[in-house]
Amino acid sequence: MDVFRLYWKEFLLMLVFAGITVAGLQLAGMWMWVLSSGAIPAYEGGTHIILALIGAILAINGLLKILANVKSKMT
Amino acid sequence: MKIKPLSIIAVLIISGIIVAVEGFATYKFIEDDPRFCKTCHLMEEAWYKWNESPHNGITCHECHRASMEDNMRLLVTYFTLRPEEVSDDVHVIIPNENCEHCHFTRSEKWPYVADTAGHKFHLENEYANCIDCHGGRVHRFIPDRSECMKCHSDKVIKVEQMNFHCTNCHNFLADVKINGDEPLPKAQDCRKCHADRYVILSMPEGAHANSDCSACHHPHVTEEPFSCQSCHTLPEKPIHQNHKDEKCTSCHVPHQEVGIRPTCESCHTERIDHYPTLSCTVCHK
Image (cartoon, rainbow over all chains, first blue to last red; front, side):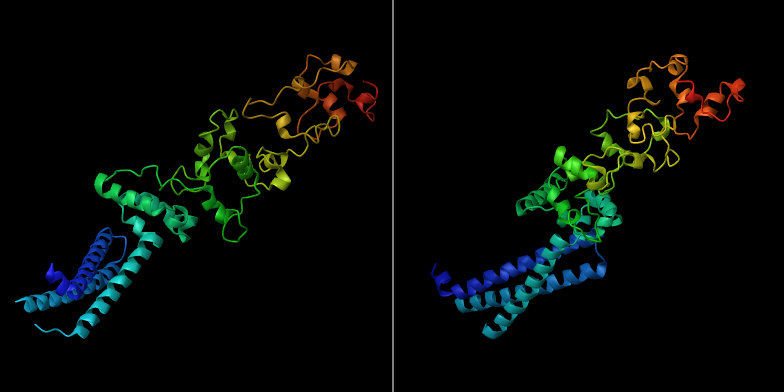
């Protein structure tokens, strides 16, 4: 419990990054499904997938950076 | 490990903006882009028919409005039950107001039907839904005869040559101010094909001039016109009594401009030189 109180800012940021990661992956998955149905041209679907994945990867990057920071502080 | 707070905030803002923009684009695609509906294979037939129809300029959701609850139900149904056909739920129910929004407003783009006899009668007297007639064949908006027959199955055509679409005679799009509130055929509707029938009876002159064709012709009841005796009894005059075994139409030839003398002479050939300048009915009453 003390850990949460001590690092609440980091945990809050991690939660936000996790949310953005899930949202980005979900959007990429959704556009992949749309693309696979042939309803939209490949370049349009591809653009959406890449953008969503960039958002998700950036968020994972932030999440891992904070996680590493918290871990280093704790040890 | 030491991290710069600025770099974390920058990553947060950039990733947040990218995912938010992408999320909004996805939301707009789902709500406003008909191509989203095409992703479901069940919708393919409906989608292609819509794409070829005059309604292809308007999006699916402008007519098929669904609440968030409906959307969630459809999503869950699609992924859990994997249905093989479209069910009669939000896909099919189109309130009349959605159609009236365009078709009850005068514009160059959409036909204005608020004051047309067929629509007014069916909407106000029969409380029909637009899709009862216009939705039976999924996005084939012009109803064919089978749509009429769903309710009017008792209306059989007895005249073989008249085996065409109901609206050829029942002028559905006639202005109520001209044709009245009911889409029943008027003389001008019959004359679209029977243009040569401008004379109804030439003898006596002007007879039935103001009658509707349906006074004698009722193709849903009999193939032949109604008999004259349905309305008229044989007059007591000698000329009628002497010809009582003849058909009325032998003398009262319908739809032909024939004078009295040629009519009588067609049988009484021996009387051609009998007072040739006088009409027969001057003496023979």
